[in-house]
Image (tube, rainbow, N blue to C red; front, top):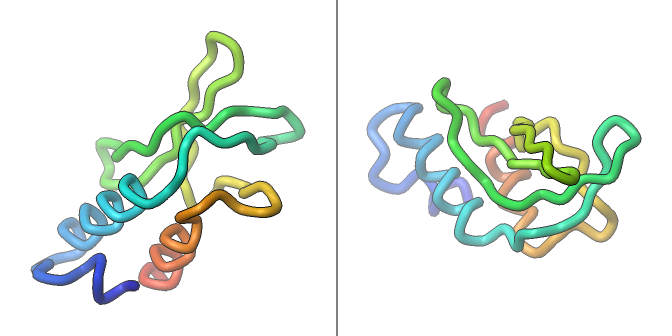
Amino acid sequence: MVAEATVDCYDDSECVMGFYTMIGDQLEVPFQTCVLGVGVTVSDIDLSDGDQIVAICARGRWRQPIAVLDLPLPAPPPTGAEWIEAYRHWLT
């Protein structure tokens, strides 16, 4: 999966963009999860200004980006969550 996401990438920034594309394409949103004991809806995936892949979490009218690597996934995880684990593997 790492090779698929990073094909034709020349630097780390391009690799992050490759993972962002794969996670955005493959992760089935929206889905429900719990952040700090509060139920939220993950409505989208985005890229922060610092080249960090974030999940857009919503509760009511509130929206908060959370790094996908810090996002607690529900059990069972949504379809495509294996791309988050591939991203985690690439970073380590």
